[in-house]
Length: 125
Image (cartoon, rainbow, N blue to C red):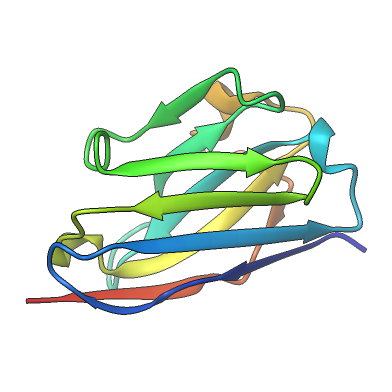
């Protein structure tokens, strides 16, 4: 059974940093493109960042580019999201996603086969 388990969320002040982790199990992690998405209260889920199987291709949404960094460790079956210079508008539940059949570009459209349950990030001023 495939499981994606996010961790690292919490409350932080404006300008602070958090590092999210997503531990995958039940799959051959290196075969999957991975991504992070978020959903703010009352809003639709949106793309944050995606990374290809080999980490050679990475995409970011314009809203996080330059502040967030996605990375992966295939040996640990884990994908990370380092979030710096956090803003109140970054407040959301952050979800990890995995796709076997799609690459990092297609995964931006939330076309994932597997999703985690999410971790809440709250940024306060």
